[in-house]
Image (tube, rainbow, N blue to C red; front, side, top):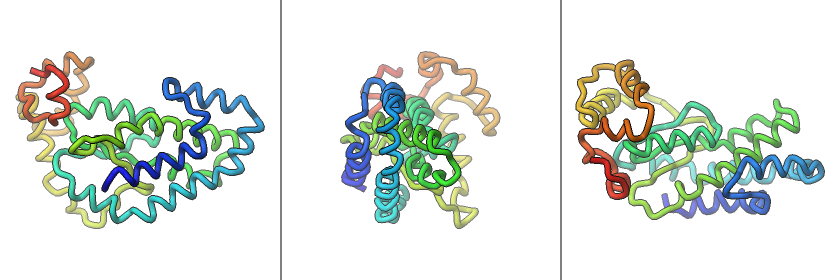
Amino acid sequence: MTNEFYEEYFQIIEDNFGRYFKANDPIESVNSLLKQPMTTRILYETSETITDDIYDLFKKNEDKIFTELDSLKGFKTHFCGSVAPQDTEKFLCRTGLYVDTTIISDPITFIHSLKHILNKPNFTELLFRHAFKMLKLKNALINDSETPILRIIPRPSLPIEDSNVYEGADKQVLSFFNELFDENIESFDELEEIISKIKTTDKLIENITNSKLLVPEITECFDIK
C-alpha cells in the first residue's frame, strides 16, 4: 500500500474541513466551528459528502488494505479501546517504543454508521472532532518510514473467519516482552501487572534490557541503552 491511499483520504477531509483546522489546537478548531451555527448547519447538511467519499474510498481499496496488513513483518497491534483519535494518539505514543505498526479503525466511517441514531449537535461535534484529530495523525500515516507506523482499516474491525488465525500469537508476544524486559512472564495478567507499574517513559526505558528488539526508528532517535 503506497501513501497514495492516505493522501486521498486526507485530501477528502481537507477539502471539506481543512480551512477550519488549526494544527496546533484541533480541539479549539472544533469549538470555534461549533460557535458558528450557520456554518455548522451547512456542514451537517453536506456531511454525507465526506462520510460517503471516505466510505467509498475504503470500499474500493479494502482488498489492498488487508493484503498489505497480512504482508507486514514485525509486531502489529490493533487498537480496539475506542474510535476516538485522541485516544489513538496516546496509544500510538506508548506502543511506538516496541510495536512496528499500530492499526486503528477509521473513526469517520464509524461515524457514518451512527448518523441515524445521533442528534444533529452530537453527530456534528463527533464528525468535526474526529476529522480534526485524524488530520493531526497525518504524519504518522504519510511518511518515508520503511515499516508503516500507523495504518487504518474501515469499520467493522478485522474479520476473523478462522478461530486459529492468531494461533501462537500469545506465546510470541509474551516471548518478546520476556526478552525485552528480561523477565519470565507466563501470562498476560502478569504482563499487564508489570506494565501497569511503569509510570513514566524514563522508567520504561530503565526496564528495557534488550533494546535490539526495538524498531530502528526508535533506537536511532533515542538513547535507549
